[in-house]
Length: 218
Ligand SMILES: O=c1[nH]cnc2c1ncn2[C@@H]1O[C@H](COP(=O)(O)OP(=O)(O)O)[C@@H](O)[C@H]1O
Ligand SMILES: [Mn+2]
Ligand SMILES: [Mn+2]
Ligand SMILES: [Mn+2]
Image 1 (cartoon, helix red, strand yellow):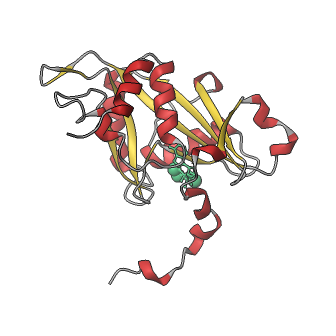
Image 2 (image 1 turned 90 degrees about the horizontal axis):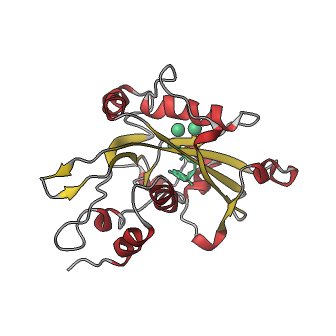
């Protein structure tokens, strides 16, 4: 008998409310250095990172793969990026690097997330939560190495239920592939972070993203 109905959150209780779905109206873009303003000193900060490797392979000889992009199936059933809550007093990028080591066994000897990898930050006034987002491009060989190493990450099998690559192509029926992927439940504002960075890192055009968002299963 599963224990989901005992209502307890255990040690998760102090952060579980951050995981609840919020409407996009509660979240607005904020500049990275604005987040260092004293009024945000009591806000909880989180940082997540998109690791990707551009590639021009054709899937089944038909569909442009564009890039290998790493996301994860989380313990809460949402899809999200590796990363997490920055500890009190912890430097933001140090916190992101720590979370990447915990969650995907990131090799800090090879790559470290720096402020130059920053893509966008959002603030959720309601939750008093700031969500920093980074993206780092790596060679495909290193990307594949990371995927393998992620299986022996400390949080593999608890916070992280596995990693996924994202299908960035749209198949013949106009829906399966990327549009179908976007119908998943996403953690925090990770869906927005994904779309923003695909455009910013020139993996997809704004028009392609809009088409994917409008596509309907037939
Ligand atoms: O990929 C993401 N992008 C943006 N926000 C996320 C992502 N994953 C989770 N979040 C939000 O940030 C909060 C903390 O992230 P996470 O659950 O990864 O922390 P942890 O790894 O330290 O436990 C989550 O409760 C959720 O609201
Ligand atoms: Mn954490
Ligand atoms: Mn974590
Ligand atoms: Mn996490």
